Image 1 (cartoon, one colour):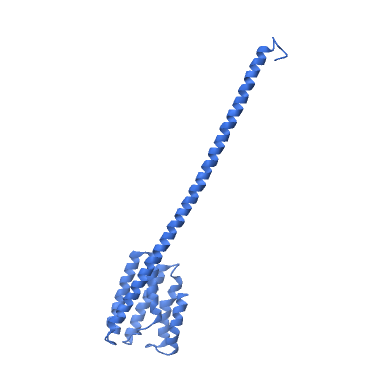
Image 2: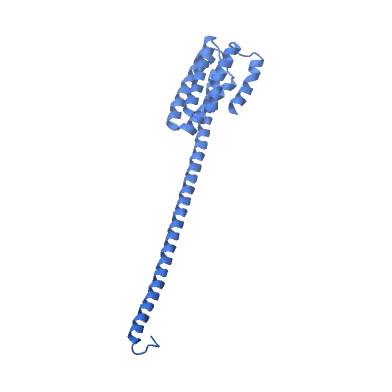
Length: 210
């Protein structure tokens, strides 16, 4: 869905012919940036570095014409990739990925945007703000996912403990019933033995009572 939304953002630029490079090249870079987003949950690390490769390809292409498309909807994929790294891969690898993004941003700003506008640094600051927002959003979502995972794990432990306690209770009840049954049977057998002994003693003196 995200990739489709970003494609829709790119359509007006292509339709109006506002690209600096030939449109097939522009479309190819868009595919390299947006295509890997389809795999970002299943193969997060691979997807994110493919997006980064698309960003590097964009730098090369725009460097070949000595100009930059300052507004490009597909570039949002780089922020989405950073968010994905934080949520699905981990902070350490996300930090490495973030360093690469910062280097690419600095290169893009100084090499391509600076010659075009005196306020080139505003574009760089805007990108940094977007990347910081993506990181913070990833931290929030990652914390929520970790919390939910911990809650689910605790629920499973409670269910297992409940089942274990139920089995223990059943075993104890069976043991109690067995003890009571043993006591009843033992008492009955004892009475039978006493009566048999009494009958044996009385059989000669009082046969009728025996």
